[in-house]
Image (cartoon, rainbow, N blue to C red):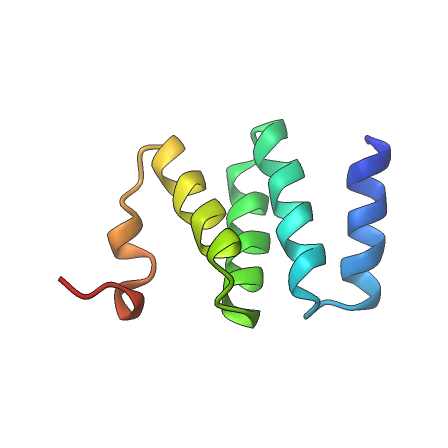
Amino acid sequence: MSPELKRFEEVTAYQPEQAQGNYFLGLVHLERGDLEAAKDCLLKAAQSSADPYFLNALGLAYLEYGLAFRTLLPNYLTL
């Protein structure tokens, strides 16, 4: 386990609703190719805060793996 992954897991274990911790943990999981873990963390971050960085990372995670962002957050999209 990488030191970054371990540290962000410690932060989110201590403060599970901490948006930035979930965001950075999600990015580490995404970099490692663990889509399920990345999706869970990035979704928690986006639900905790509508920060554009969190929403963008979540959208990019889905697009990178060929999933439609549209199905993930339909309430945020207005067409």
